Length: 318
Image 1 (tube, rainbow, N blue to C red):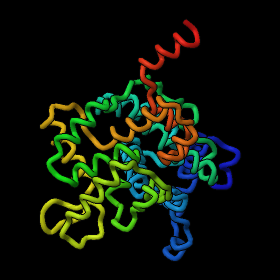
Image 2 (cartoon, one colour):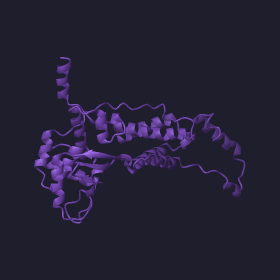
Image 3 (cartoon, one colour):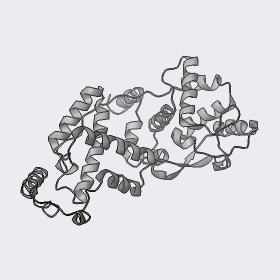
Image 4 (cartoon, helix red, strand yellow):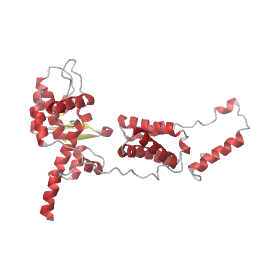
């Protein structure tokens, strides 16, 4: 069957397998012959290993594994026998059952496409069944950002030096919250107002903060009595390193207390990207600042303000 893969499609391979079962069912294998049979490879684990070597983060690997494993469990076919209609039916059923958004369905399609394309490249299958399933059109939603007033309200009403330092660092660097919680005290270069963060795929990059962030960060560190090397820690003993969830909960509570909607760490990153584009920062430089692999991702983050579109129209057209 392996030798016939270059000449038959997936459905034909399945028919060949059935034919071999019919012809060979009358023969018995001796016990000592069983050891010579090649076991069916665990394609999913092999794929995850390949992605790990490519530098994918543990979070991404877990997402890939769960997504593909769920599909295999639902389709209930050998990987080499799955056809395009099986994938289409699975995506349709999944969307109806979970009431998932088009973005979620397209993410699943993208992961399955990557998996089957890898199987095709490795000659485990002749052709990926996802090849004929096109990208799901998701539409464009204008993402919310913080206004200058929102940021000032949060700063003015911070009751802890740590919270002030966190808000300033997130808003001036545009770093991911996962990058911020990994920072240590010695990672901060106050002289150059910069620090090195580890982004997705363990990629290093330099981010920069403003003078206000420098002052508030120094005030926070000078006020601490603990010996933890982490840049941000809990407010009470044993002063453990802050987690992503801890930062999210803290910011959400601050937002509720001040009557601000949807206060979360990622919104600071989107706000910085939008402000940078709005003020004329070249998109290539913003891409490097945010640590995006593809410039399309940067463009999705940076939403140009409608007021500036109106001004530009009057300047160049009207």
